Length: 112
Length: 115
Image 1 (cartoon, rainbow over the protein chains, first blue to last red):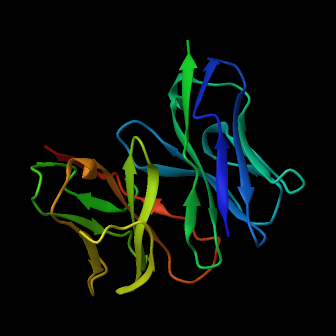
Image 2 (spheres, rainbow over the protein chains, first blue to last red):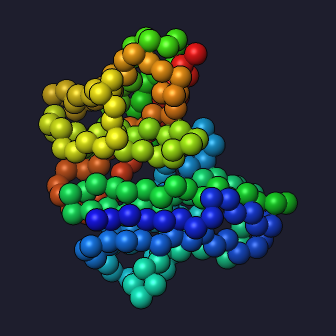
Image 3 (cartoon, chains in turn purple, red):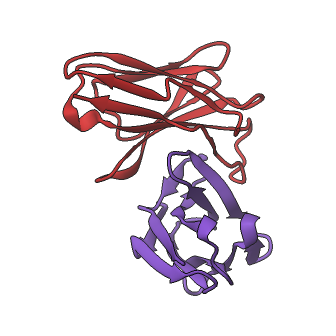
């Protein structure tokens, strides 16, 4: 079975500070992992995905995530937060049947 | 614009009523997924269709039903509405093929308010 756990439902950072959003996964097969972002009043957009190639995955808007098998983690980072990064972030894992399992989301607030 | 079109964007109705939400997937995508997003339950998977056939079912209530038509658009029917059905309903589509690298492309959602 596949699942993801996002630690911290709310994260606040200062503008210019490091963004770190945590995601741990559970998967009975080698995982395919995704980060999605949801801006207010919008649908979810793909930030990046890990599909068993490079462990460090670069996404849009300066975000990246590192797959760590030993820690079963896929944390999302951005070196310097921008006001426009304020949004809800979802981690997800897919199963061999192409079903997606989403975490409960982390709301990111950026403080000016 | 993600290429996934959902209508209506907003819908206000009363308890006991029935509504239909519509989704047109991205061009070329054969799979359609429906999700419900509410404040207390997060993003819940409801149902998936692939090329007109039901592929997987999630936490979909018996009062809810869906179908995918030959032109690949999908409709989610919600009946005997209750206050707790107020939520954002998202449709997502994905390309053909069973590769796990397929990503979901989401529509902008339909916000349902039941009064």
